[in-house]
Length: 96
Image (tube, rainbow, N blue to C red; front, side, top):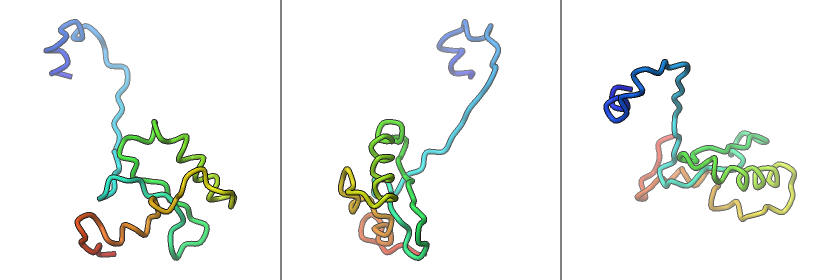
């Protein structure tokens, strides 16, 4: 708020009515994790969109719906499979 008021002094006269904060999730390789979790049948994970979920959400939602219904996926879901994260970026093995 202070920095914004430095840049735009008019803001000092405006009351703050609400605030929001959020967490941007990401994966080690920067690619969302989308797919069924091994060992938890029926649990579909869709996370790690790194703040791009708004833009790619419609396509991801379509792909997830295809996975859930058993339809031919709109795109190949294999690059997004969560188990790829067992070996994280730079070839290091993840500790689970």
